[in-house]
Length: 210
Image (cartoon, rainbow, N blue to C red; front, top):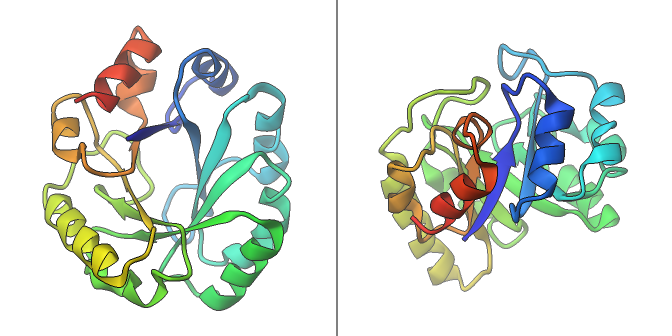
């Protein structure tokens, strides 16, 4: 299992990411919010793009925005591995897939807690990753929603049935206690548990080996 560390809620972003550079974390998880799809709003791209100067890790970017299509050209300039969009957005998903494919960027689709996981089934052959939200998107420090576990099992069965290689990522409320229930997923996203700990590497290792 890989670990993607979110800096959402970090007081000093540059220091947090610099400290993550010396760990074996697989990705830096970047949350982007427009104040429309979710209530909160993150820094504009002009500021966020500075991450390229101090992050040595590949980026796992989560766009919690209504209209991500117009943002892809900008975010494609970063050291991005995955660009993840929400399945219920306004933009045409097929156009998003085409644009990401043009840049050679891996595609993720996110499913909110209120949505049935079957909402992504029509796209499993076209995407690289499904991000299951285990909290409501937009706020750090929420409690893990346990029904996510049944969604994981259902999605794993569908992926196996379709014989595709789509990965499963889970994001929200993950700590050292509930991570043990997530050992069979592909990517674990954790923010507060890592960045509020006294030893990033030790926490990352514990999450990965739970």
